Length: 151
Image (cartoon, rainbow, N blue to C red):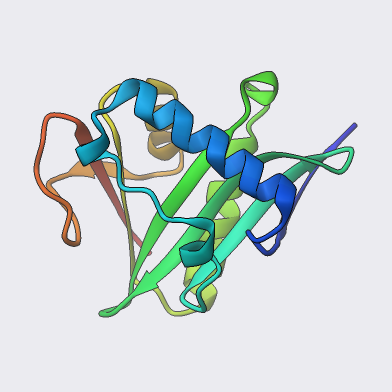
């Protein structure tokens, strides 16, 4: 089956399950005080747009664009289930986030990811992001890796 990516509400039961899986995965790799989760309720706020990847109707990946002041957009909640990794789902979601950011007038995309996520680094670097220092109000720590991209 082909993967379909669309803007959806994060308040659906299967998306909640996907986000819970993402949260559990992050907590396996990073101390809780350096994991910066958004709840599904926060993801449903107007400044955030959530993309869900589905395979045969089943939610298998997600990512979001959170818009901030000063024309800054943040890539958040990126995750692909292990069963679907290697199929460029993350890359497709990042492309959709970037396209929406451009449409909304965002001039700079930023993100924070963990120091134990080399597959994520590859997705971002292939999409043209470069490493940078801390962004927004994130603390500088050995657990975080930051990226940015000018649009």
